[in-house]
Image 1 (cartoon, rainbow, N blue to C red):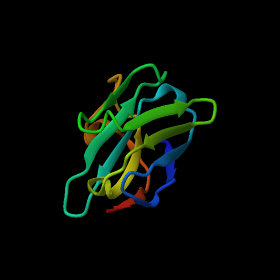
Image 2: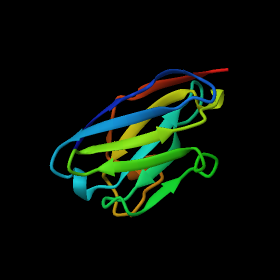
Image 3: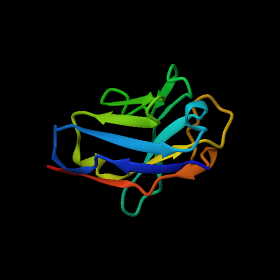
Image 4: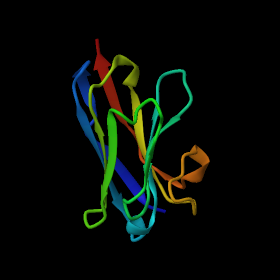
Length: 125
């Protein structure tokens, strides 16, 4: 299984932007779909975005697709999540996930085999 390390989280004011990165180790990165999830206190982990192994196909949570963009650099074994116009309700721990499914863009927690430790994003009003 891949090892995933997220970075780029922090404290930002509403309306601001952050770019999360997820560095992956292992030889399967370029052949694996990747995803971002988030979990707020007291809530279940929810799907944010996913990207196919090639980067050609992406999928987003409906409420986020106008503000968030997922991308990947297979040469650098990194997947990114650009988050714009952040809102206080975006506050959560954001997790990167990879592999485990033959789906082009998996969207369920159980579709992913490897997870990072998460990075905290806090949006102040």
